[in-house]
Length: 198
Length: 154
Image (cartoon, rainbow over all chains, first blue to last red; front, side):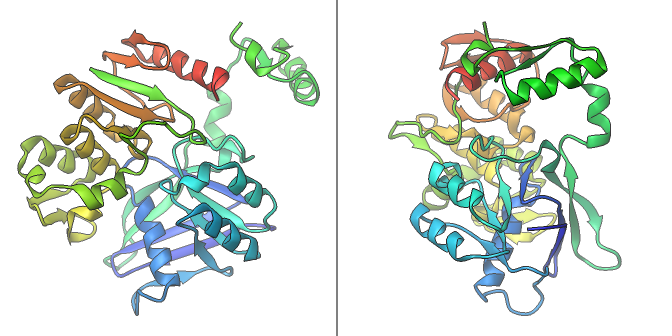
């Protein structure tokens, strides 16, 4: 996987535009912002149920994984370079077996979930919410696009640490110690996750 | 009182009354008369911006006239919390725009929900965190409790 992937999903009433910058993108945000509807449209489209008026524009195949864990993982293993969408109500999304299959895959992923996925590495910059921006151009389509939950430009100003505490004592600690020296903030290692609260 | 079980997504709550997917539970179990309740109508209006016309017809500003099954996952979770308080509903299906309604339901009756993220509850509130047994009333304590679960149980 390399580069940005643009996904445009449209029906007569809705239009979604997503720009995926990394292999894992998280969609979260308020209820009723259209996340599950997006997944349903993609699923219906790929199943050939939508008929004319519904369109997905993307240079990769867009797939929704759903159902039982075993079936979802088997299907994922058969996919190459697809864009894979998974909704929060799929319990396999939080499983170790699925995380391992994601890590071994060359696909792009869009996960709709508010809970953290601790077994997967993804960037804080790739956590988005969907926002309805009114009607698309001169159509009757309600236009939805992605906005960062933690905007890159604003977060630097908001985070002013007095101490940096790292969980580990090796590479992560060394990196933050070097950063801490640059910004004149002391850095210490907790020497393990369970020591952080002490 | 609102009771919250903090829980990470990878772990299941071992309780026969736990509803992991409120969306699916709602689809097979909702009752028509739920939509005659003014409190339900208010939640649907506020969260989804939709008007309950009848038990079979919801007027959505985006989707037009829809069936109750097409309400948002968040409002479905709220309705289950309110109408079936013995169930433990997965409140991660709810966005921050549902927080005030979860607090309201907790004022009306005892409910227990499962939560896997730092939902933004507006102070002041009365919440019992089941993991520690502590009763909390401000968001700073809420975040501390959440972090402790993250660190020790996560």
